[in-house]
Image 1 (spheres, rainbow, N blue to C red):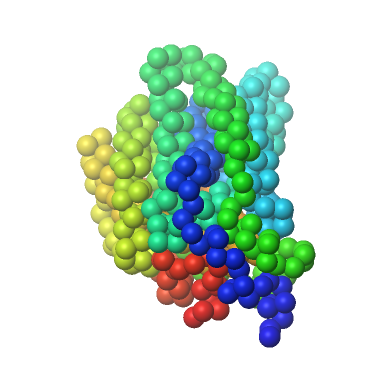
Image 2: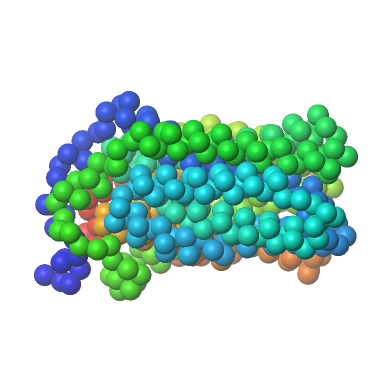
Length: 449
């Protein structure tokens, strides 16, 4: 027996209850509880990314170029604290349960987003305005460090093994729904109020919607039991504390490295397409403010339709083929598609739709792929820490890096080259990822292989 065996029960000792498909009504509520929290997280990103021009003018000093760069950098700052959130919430979720942690994170997330709408302008309070924004973005990042890993784990542990890809895809449906809602609200208020009112006060209104979203999510999560997998693990394991970072790095470094590498590709593409794209289309391609908002909204609605389709397909053919197709096709086609994007509104719309089609196989399978790489007793912590460390370095910084590379080189294709490099890293990580489709979450795929 190895020293890791003493930390958790033998795989075959876990109760068989959690391998049975959950009751349909319970499963639907688990999906809604997970997806709504993720939608709240991405609603915040959506209104921030799509309102960055207004936010930068209201809360930051300097000319337009400097203010936008400061606002993008502040967006990235929230990601720097995500690993701390993962380190705090992950082990807590493995010790106390997924449900308790997710109730706390959704309240923190929605509360921080709500408060952003009440920050006084730079003209009123000077540097306290960006300072307050940075503080709230850090609270947002800290809570998100536990939210996404917990929601994906919660979803995966409720789903039947043979349909984990399909049900897990609804978490990313929630991602796109939240982001789209934020974008549509910002665009809608822009069309109704006009630029003058938006710069003055209109940009604040979408932030206020976070409060009811968070309350509904909290209600749904409070009505759920913890996951069958976690309850079965609790019933059969000894009363031992959740392992720390040292244990994770010693005994589970392989899945952590694989997840980190795949997340480089996943989130450089994700934040470049979803968060930076409105700014890119407006400032680098020359589209109007409204056109730059409409293009990604159309693309995201298209991707929402694809989520359950690709999730179901991954249950049939596996996660690895889905990721391989996405990474290789993006690597080969992202530069030509960015060139098409530069031709105008029609070209930008077509290019974004194709990029969304190529990226969707990754996005649709996150919740089925990553949690299954870790055994139950470290699933929340291992996923949350690996995911958030990689995201903080490569994901949240992608908009600022893309903008900075263009300013440095004068080449508008630099975000595409950055995406190519990220996909190359992802292809290396995929080489070492075991296939987990249809496998039980009681298993440890790296011990099995």
